[in-house]
Every structure is written in C-alpha cells, then in structure tokens.
Image (cartoon, rainbow, N blue to C red; front, side, top):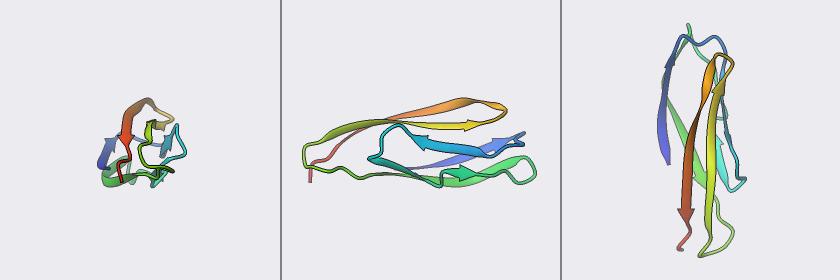
Length: 79
C-alpha cells in the first residue's frame, strides 16, 4: 500500500508508526521544508508469517502541532 502525504503550517516532523509489527511504514519520519510536506510517498508493507493469516494494524501519523491521523488496515495473506 502506498499513499501520498501533504501538509502545511508544520514546524515539527511527522512521525509514522504501525500498531502491528507485521506492517512496516517507510519512511517513519518526514521533516517539513519551509513548513510544508509535499507529495511524500509513504509505503506500508505487510509481512505475514503464514498463509491464511488475517492481520490488522493502525497506522498513526502525528506531529507536535497536529491531531493524529489514523489509517486502519486489515489484510488477508492468501499465498
């Protein structure tokens, strides 16, 4: 899964984290330039351990001056 992050009026970096170790987030920290984050591509990778496994995670984006944003994912590993 990929998504694009944009933001303005930022003085602090945005931290991205996953509630489940099977979902990695890259990058995990994005720093603004001149108060802005423009078109930063974020990749979430699902690394299941067994076929037929259903897993879910909450991806949290937070910064010192903003309310956290959350993306909730649920994946089923078929093969």
